[in-house]
Amino acid sequence: MQLYLPLCPYHPVKLRVKSWAFAIALASLALGFALGFLAAGLQPSYSFEPQVSTIKPASESATYAPLATSARTPGQAVSSGAEPTYSLPEGRKVVVEGYVRLRVGEGEVKTVADQLSAIAERLGGYIGEMSVWESGGYVILKVPYDRYSEALEEVKKLGEAVEVRTVASDVTEQYVDLSARLNASKALERRLLEILAQAKNVDEMLKVEEYLARVRADIERYEAQLKNLERRVQFSTIYVQIEAPQKEVKPLVQFPTFDIVPALARALGLLYSVIYALVTVVIGFSPLAALGAAGYLVYRKLRANTQQKQQSG
Image (cartoon, rainbow, N blue to C red; front, side, top):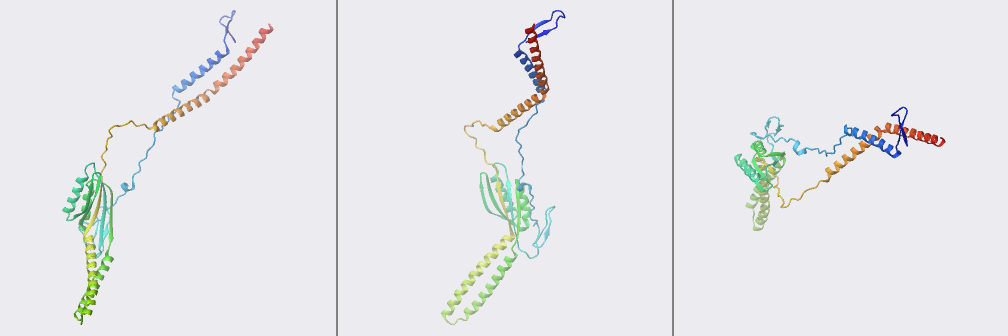
């Protein structure tokens, strides 16, 4: 290939340039434009950081209002602040039970258990059961029914109350049924004693005493059930579950950890950036490529004409 440079109007200078050198020059020009666009910040920034959403458990988001039983007698309706009012009709027997899940600090389980015991004793109650270990435990408090709300509030102050529940069970029908059975059995006992006093022989006495023994066993059973039911009504129950974080045991040799997820995220980000840059270069320099192709075709045409003239001359 020859290029004529009109450095002098009378003596043009002839330069011989090879075709591959001309193609390299065009490619270098295109690469320079591409690097210029990339340096100007045309490539997008991709973020592959994992999005972690925190879902609040329903046990933490729900609010449980304790039974308002402070300083009341059965049948009175008592309201405490914004808490709902629980109405106990007069003469009803109601068993109140509560549940509290406490979250305390590390090493505080034994201290909280002792404080729960002190609360029960101060309010006139007692501890029904207690079990404590290093990372948790549970305590069952028995408090007078009219001090239930006060006890529940003091229990919640000993840690983070994760869950609080209150259940009130009406046992009036069960109480009335047991009372009726007891009265009927006592009336039968009195009648059997009268029959026993009128017995005429040993055989009649033995039969009456055998039946009387069964009736007296029923009376003792009904009396025990009634006492247990009255005790449950008079003393409310609060089940307290204590939770504490376990102590972290450090290993003797700590090996380095490798997480492949961030590496894959960065690799994907780099791949997308390269694809974006290639698409930008191809689309952005397509006009220049068309002009270059047209120029190359013109150059081939001129070269062919020049060679023909030289051969004819």
